[in-house]
Image 1 (tube, helix red, strand yellow):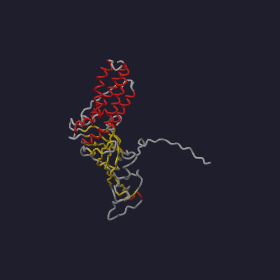
Image 2: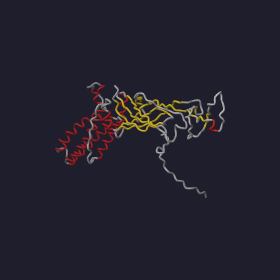
Image 3: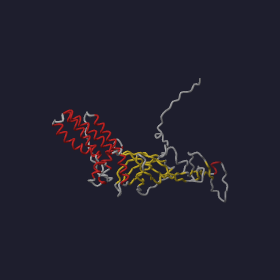
Image 4: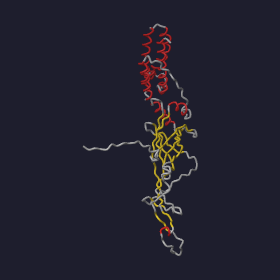
Length: 357
């Protein structure tokens, strides 16, 4: 039977130890962009990169929705002249006392047309919480150093016990010595003799693709983004659900909401009609068909609702009458939104009638 020693594993914080984890988008903050004629969204981004070894020289990319559809091209806002440094590998650059990474700060902008905004809104409605989920495919153009500084130093002949002889007609000469010891400091500085890293290539330009997901909450989109993007202002209705006494009716309302997210307008009307039928039967059984509560209070409220909810059933019948222009006979998302809100209000009203409030 083999006996194996016990192994202990310890979690290591790589960032704390200063290990390079690779280029990544460390943070990103979306905002409505108001410095253009077209509506747009800006993203304040921070990208980590390896200092001295590389320099970021450009950022671009694509803005997508959560279903992978491309909305717009992402472009970098040029803030002005900036100096970026890269250095060859050598005894002084890249020592442990130097930070292994730096942060590149930039502003990215995506300008959106009407079709892009409509698709964002369609995906937002499909989201259960009404949030906007976006994906940034960020293309970072990087110039990378491949040059190496040889450890060449000048020393005096007597430093290595050589006689002071005349060379090429002068005694004022020195020796160039190669050493791999980074802590060796001669009386003169490095000669900065460059070579490629096992290659005649000194610099390379490459592109890296960084992907970042961004969530804009429903409340932020409605209050901060929509008015500035030209989508108008939203009318937000909060309906207290109370004790949810008529659970079956709320279930129909939930199904109607799911249909609305899928843009199934006929499904919205069908489920909302079921809400009405169910509530009408319950209220009639509770108070009687000739009671004031049922005939007047409930009857007036339900009558208007039932008239609108039945529109989805009579579209073909209305077309056949040829009373209106054919292109005008339709039910739209606006109609579905109205009947959905009215359904929830009607459930709440029925529950309060049944409680006697």
